[in-house]
Amino acid sequence: MKELFQIPLAERLKPLNFSEFVGQKHLVGNEGILKNLLKTNRILSFILWGPPGTGKTVLAHLIGKTLNANFVALSAVDTSLKQLKEIIHQAQKLKSIGKLTIIFIDEIHRFNKSQQSFLLPFIERGEIYLIGSTTENPSFEIISPLLSRLKVFILNPLSQDEILIILNRALEDKERGLGSLEIEVEKEVLEKIASASSGDARFALNTLEWLVEINLAQNKKKLTLKDLSEELLFKPLHYDKAGEEHYNLISAFHKSMRGSDPDATLYWMLRMLKAGEDPLYIARRIIICAAEDVGLADPMALVIATAAKYAFEFLGEPEGELVLAEAALYVACAPKSNSVSLALNSVSEEIEKTKNLSVPLHLRNPVTRLMKTLGYGRHYKYPHNFERGFVNQNYLPEEIKDKIFYRPKEIGFEKKIKEHLRSLWKEIKKWD
Image (cartoon, rainbow, N blue to C red; front, side, top):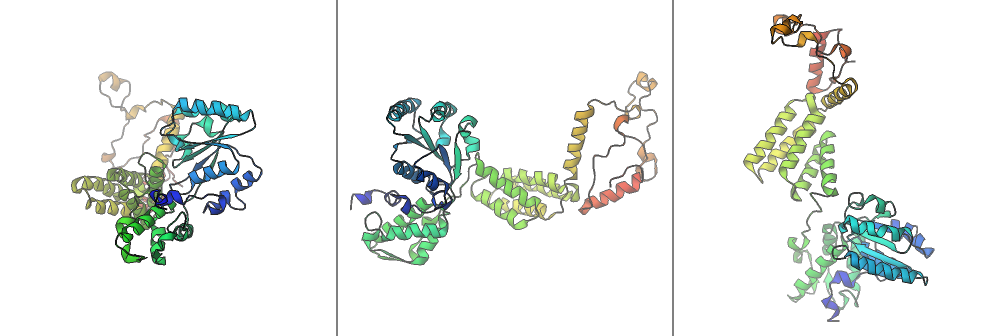
C-alpha cells in the first residue's frame, strides 16, 4: 500500500473500464456515438478535443483495451519521425496477421506539419488508426488533409455532480483511493472543491489529495471547511493569448458591448484581465467598438474610449482597470449605430466598381495659370459665403453624383445629424 501511495491519486483512480468512466455521456453513454461504434468491434480515426481533466487520455486507453488492439501511446512533445516509422512498420506486420494498431498521440497539436503529413497515407490505407487528444482547436492546429480524415469529438468540462462522484469514489476506494486512511470529509468541503475545479477531475483529485496529506500531517481525521485554504482552491483561469480561448473571450467582450449588456461586458473584461491579457489590447477593443458599433450615435464614446487608453498608460494597474471599466461601460450603454462602417463599405464597393473617376473641375484647385484656363475651380461656390455656411453643389464625380453612402440612423446624436442634413439638402438628397 505504501508503494501505491507513491503514485498520485489522480493516476491511481484512472478508470479501468467504461463502467468506472464518469462524464461524456454523449460519447460513451448508452446512446453515445463511440459506445455504439465499439459494439461493432470497429474503430475509426478521430481526435478528442476538450479542456484538461475531462478524460481524453483515459478514454483513448479504454478504447484500445476494449478492442484488444496493439495500443501505442505517444506524446507529441517527445516523439520523433524515426520513432513513428518504427511503430508503423510494426503496425504493418501486425495487420498482416489481423491485429489492428491504434496510435494514441497526446497533445497532437504539438506535432509539426511534417509529422502530421507523414501519418496521412497510413491512416488512408487503414494500416493504423489514430486517436489524438488536444486542448487546442483542431481547426487551427491540425493540417487540413489530416483533419479531413479524422472525426473530431468534443469533451465537455465535467459537471459539479460528476466531479463529486469522482471525489466520493476516491474517499471510499480502499485499494486505489483514500478509503484505507479512514478520513472523514464534510460534504461542503467536497462541494467547494468540485466548484473550484471548473470541470477538471484531475485538479479536483489533486486538491483532495493535498488537503488530506496536509491534515494527516497534523493528525486530523475529520476535515471541515476551515481546513480548506484558498491556496489549495486556486486554479489559474484557462487562457492562451495566442490560442482560441483568447479569441473566444475577446469576441464575447466585443459582442457584449455591441449588445448593450454592461454586466456581460464587465464579466468578460475582468476574465481576460485576471487571466493575464494585455490591458492595452482590451483598450484597443473598446476603441474599435466605439467606432464600429456606436459611431455617430454618440461621438463621445470614441473620445472616452481613446482617453481611457492614455489614462491607463498613465495610471497603470490596478487603478487603470477602473478607467477601462468606465470606458467599456460607457460604450456598452451608449446608443448603437454602424452607419459609419456601412458607409465605408459602401464607398469601398463603389470604388472597386467604378475605379478612377475624374474629380469634377469645380473641385480642383487652379494652382497654375494653365489650370485656371482649363477651367479648374471654375463655378466653385465657397460655402461660407452663403447663409448657414451651405450651398447646394455637387461634390462627387459626375457619374455617381446621386449616390448616398452615409445613411444616418434615427438613434442618439445621429438623429440630430440626420435632421441637420435634411434641413440643408432638403429634397436634393434623400436618406429614407
